[in-house]
Each structure stands twice: as C-alpha cells, then as structure tokens.
Length: 457
Length: 148
Ligand code: HEM
Ligand code: HEM
Ligand SMILES: [Fe+2]
Image 1 (spheres, rainbow over the protein chains, first blue to last red):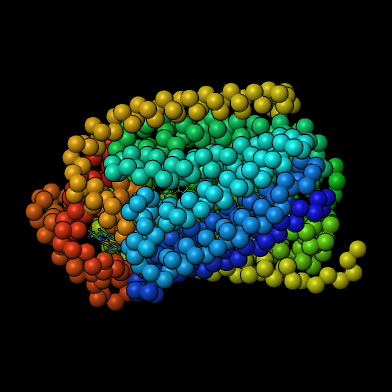
Image 2 (cartoon, rainbow over the protein chains, first blue to last red):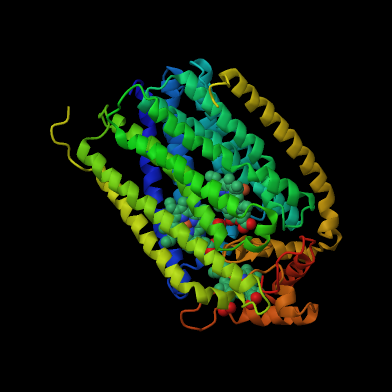
C-alpha cells in the first residue's frame, strides 16, 4: 500500500461483506417462503423479507463501491486522500442509517414505519428497491455528496488518470440519478417511467462505468499491462455501455402505458447492451495473456475473469433472452426476470467487489504479495461454491419462469397464478438447495481470512 | 480489432456517443411525458385514485404483487384484477375487494399468505378505484390473458 489513507477502505469492505451475509440469509428466508407459505408468517411477511434482501444488496454494493474508490483513488492520484477523517465519519453515518433502516423494516409494520418517519411530508416510500424512509434517502444523498467531495478533491489535486475520471463520472451519475427517487407523481405511468431512471440507469449505465474502472485498476495491478492499452479498452467498453444502455432503458417501457414506439426503440437499443459485457470478457483474457508480471495473488485475477464471464451470462445472455418486445410480452414480470436479476447483480456487482477485496484486503493486512497459498486455495473453493450456487439458482429460475409462461400465459386452458406456482414448487426446492450452497461458499470465503500462513515470505 | 483503434479514437467515441445517446433519450422522454396523460386517461385520476395509490405504497403491496408486470413475483398480477375478480363491474369489484381484504390472512396451511392491513372501508374503496383506473391504462394489450 502506497498511501496510508487507503486504509479507510478497510471498514467499508468488511461491512459490505457482513451485509452480504445478511442478504443471502434473507434470500434463503424468501426461498423458503416460496415453498412453505407459513414460514415466519406473520412475524416476517414476504414483502418485508424481500425489502431487507434487496436493500441490503444495494447498500452493500454502495459500501463496496466506496471502499473500492477510497482504496484506488489515492494510488491513482498519487497523493493522500483529501480528508480521511470525512471518510471515517461518513462510514459511521451510513452504517448507522443502514442498520436503523433495516431494523425499522423488521421491527414495525411497514405502514407504521411510513408514519413514524413522516413519509406523508414527502412521500417516496413503498416502491420496489426504493422502500427506504424518506429521511434515509436524504441521508444517502448527504453521504454521497460528502463522499464525492472527498474523492473529487483528491482527484483534482492529484494525477488524473482515465480510471479515476471514469470512476468519478460513474459516481456522479449514481448520485444524480438517485434524485429521481424523490419524484413520485400520482400518475402510476409517470411514476414507473422515472423509477427506471434510478434502477436501469444505475445498473445498465453509470454503475457499469464504476465496474469498468475497478476492473481496469485490478487488471493493471495484477497483470502489469501497459496503462495506455488498458485505457483504450476501458473507453471502448463504457462507450458501448452508454450508447446502448441509455436508450436501452426503453426495454422497460413496453407494457407500462408508455407510447408504442418504445417497442421498437427499446428492443433495438437494448439488443446491443450485451456487447460491452462481451468486450469485458475479451479484455480480461487479453490482459491476462499479455501480462508482464506474474503476481502472486492469483485468486484476484480469477475473480476478475469470473466477474467478466458471469456478468456476461447474467446481464448479456439472460438479459437478451427477454429484451425483445415480442418475447417480453410473455416473460414480463415472471421468474425469468428474477433469474436475470440474480445472475446479473451477482456476476457484475457482487463479483467485482470480491475482485477488489481479494486484491486490496491482503495488502491492507500487510501481505503485499497476496495471501498465502493455503488461504488462496480456500478462497478458490469458495469462488466455485458461490459461482455454482448462483448459476444453479438462476438456472432453476429460468426453468421456473419458462414453466410459468407456458402454464399461465399461453394456450387456451391457462391456469391461474397460484395454481401455476403450485406446479413449480419442486423447482423452487432445487433453487433453495443452490441457495444453501451459495451461503456455504460465502462462509468458506470468510474462513479464508483466518487461514494461518506457514513460512510466508 | 483493437489494434486499429487508438486511445484518442476510443475516447471520442465515448464522449460523442454518450452525448448523442443522452440527447436522443432526453427527446424521447419529453415526447413520452407529453403522451402519457392521454394513454393513461389521467383526467380520471380522482382524489380517491391518488389516495389509493398512496395506500398501495404505504402498505407495500408491490413487495409481493406485480402491477403491470413490475414488482415482486410472489402473488398475482393486480393491474387486471378488476377484470379477473370483478368482471369489469365496479360495484361487484368493490364488494369483492372488501371481503378479500377483510378475510386475510386465510387459514390454509402452507399456502402463501397475505397479511391483514386493517384498512377502513373507505380506504379499500380508494385502493379499488386506483386498481380500476390502472386496469384502463393503454399498455399495449398486456398481459397476454386474464390470469396476468
Ligand atoms: C449488470 C447489469 C444488469 C443488472 C444488474 C440487471 C438487473 C435487472 C433487474 C434486477 C431487473 C428486474 C427489475 C424489476 O424488479 O422489475 C431487470 C429487468 C430487466 N432486465 Fe436487466 N440487468 C442488467 C442488464 C441487462 C441487460 C444487458 C439487458 C438486455 C440485454 C437487460 C434486460 C432486462 C429486461 C428486458 C428486464 C425486464 C424484465 C421484465 O420485463 O420483467 N438487463 N434487470
Ligand atoms: C448474492 C446473492 C444474491 C443476489 C445478488 C440477489 C439478488 C436479488 C435481486 C436483485 C432480487 C430482486 C429480483 C427482481 O426483482 O427480479 C432478489 C429477489 C429475491 N431473491 Fe435474491 N439474491 C441473492 C441471493 C439469493 C438467495 C441465496 C436466494 C434464495 C435461495 C434468493 C432468493 C430471492 C427471492 C425468493 C427473491 C424474491 C423474488 C420475487 O420477487 O418473488 N436470493 N434477489
Ligand atoms: Fe434494464
């Protein structure tokens, strides 16, 4: 580690991993409620478990992004962080707000939570992924501003690299698009339309810039490839992202009361969206082939390549599967959507966090060449358990979704929703099994932190 | 491929392409916002409909249900429940909604559960009006059939 202020990243990473354990745990609760409707009812109704699951997911990714940024920006800028103190304060503010919000979901009925947080003054609650009380949302904006100020000052005063500029653009975009979370018109169509400005323009827009920047940083470090070369790839990838992904928002405007031209525009633009993910695979493998150094931290490169591949499978392949309007007509809002949601979020945004943590954490723990051979072997096992677990969950959901479409939506004697779900229960049991494997993989990953080294250099 | 493209070219594609995409999207957004009132028959958004939407959010119905295909996949689609359970008749739909909301959670072992929300008759009517309004939005003939 070149700059001592990079250390502020450590609590961010650790907290993100703790939240990930909670997220997977609540995923298992949801998966159980799919096969046993009485499970934990009425203590934790499905919708409450779901908001805990998805909100933990989003918050842990934000913690991970911040940790990654605090780690790589000083090194790229070749100076200490503008204010390590501010970074520490925002950590505690954000952690407190996050924990309080999750406890709020679990301890009182949601309707009560809206009342005690004065949602009626500026109603923003009760929409998917944006369930947070309005005051939490305001807190997120304040934390984001403090964070961007800190990073912006560091970047401006130091060396400017393509990686830091792209990262900062992504983070600014993240903050700006979040502001649409405060706009909740009475017209449901407009509400839905602008809701996607947060959700889609995050995951298929600005977050991809952040993903690309973190990936580029780790690839430079572990392959030693010339920066000029990496930069060119990064520009190409994010160019494709913006060109396809912004107008590609239209793949959500097929059947929600928006004009018919979106059927064409959304289909065509979003059909190009897999391309940047495919480029990421080429890029990761090309950089490995052209590597100038043999870094001892092998597992970080494994995570980097895995990120590119699973993100392509989840976002590119499963996304393309339902992105053309005539197909989406039948798959819209089925388990196929959930299949895609799981593999894309995991492959792109959870695995990139493992990538940077796998690279940076050993260094912050004083192991400049990465963990020892034994710890890396354990981590490699956890890599495969989690990847196979999530692939299994997603494949089960692809089967579940296909069954749902054919039983409930096509043909003359279609079954109702609840009867259809009853038919799919065996597949949901399989999903639960793969969920358990994912959790075991995560616990194995945690264990790899405590593997003792023998004869480290 | 990448050999022929220089870093400067890649950067120009990024800036040029990005700005172009933002402009196209902004233009389409303005057009859409202009058309939505007609497509959604916004003149029918009464105070009751608006309050119904607010109650829909306040009780997080979307945490189990989809509405126009968006939300959670645990419970039936509700954008067309007016046709499915009310047969398109406002009076019978409202009666149905009152008895449905009052009888939750149902005591069927192992079946998925919907909580009791303790809503007043007026509140259930508001939610019903919201769902009736929603069912009439022009959403390109979605869903494929009445089962949602
Ligand atoms: C890492 C990138 C991506 C992530 C994290 C992601 C995540 C998601 C999630 C969570 C949903 C469900 C939203 C909801 O609850 O309603 C969704 C929907 C969708 N995604 Fe993605 N996505 C990504 C990339 C893509 C790409 C590249 C495509 C197309 C090629 C795509 C196509 C779609 C479509 C068509 C839907 C709507 C599904 C429906 O009609 O129910 N996604 N995505
Ligand atoms: C890191 C791992 C995971 C990620 C990234 C993840 C991500 C997500 C996302 C994005 C959604 C919203 C889906 C949508 O709207 O389409 C969701 C919902 C859900 N997740 Fe996960 N999840 C993970 C692990 C799990 C596990 C292990 C299970 C269960 C075994 C699980 C079960 C569920 C269920 C049942 C839902 C609700 C689907 C519905 O709306 O009916 N998740 N998860
Ligand atoms: Fe999307």
